[in-house]
Length: 273
Ligand SMILES: [Zn+2]
Image (cartoon, rainbow, N blue to C red; front, side, top):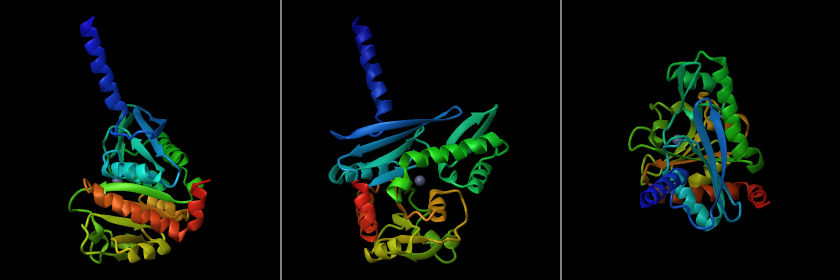
């Protein structure tokens, strides 16, 4: 009997671990889960919300948790929500279909060209149904986050030390063609930055003296959400910092929310409707 109870206790704490991917979730926080199936891959879109619906964030890579934690801090003190994609704490969607394995970056499924390119990077592309499924998955994520209602897209990403950073967008570097303008605060870490698709937001963030990139309308179509947002004329913000830079992450989120609502006051009113 005792043995069974201990087993039950162990089992229930194990189940709790699985459910609460981001402990500690503070008192009063609400969660809502939208489960998506991509063949044998289960994707849970978990919406964490608290207080007034002031602002809504979206995290699409499940191995990038610093942004999620910073967003929790933000909404605990300001109200708001975050939709966090959970599918096994890895970067890519991996699944099989008709006996074949497929893999893609979930940030490449928002345009048709991007879907094909994203799959090709990891091998198998030759399955029309998979292409359709990925398009549907992208739409499901968008419908749940709901930029139509919000009037913007505000994503959170994290990156590794070195490699990609604000300087990747400078003359002579690999992402130069993706940016119209770049502003650098050389006192900040090269890996901590904000990317926007809108000149007004860019100018505002430049004034706030933070690393910021204005994406070019000619940015290569990689199927990413920023390219989607630019095509659809939806103001887009990505706050992206190096893994672990949680304090800086929170600071940049605060600055970006302020920039968003000072640039577009009507969106702030809309948020509290
Ligand atoms: Zn990311």
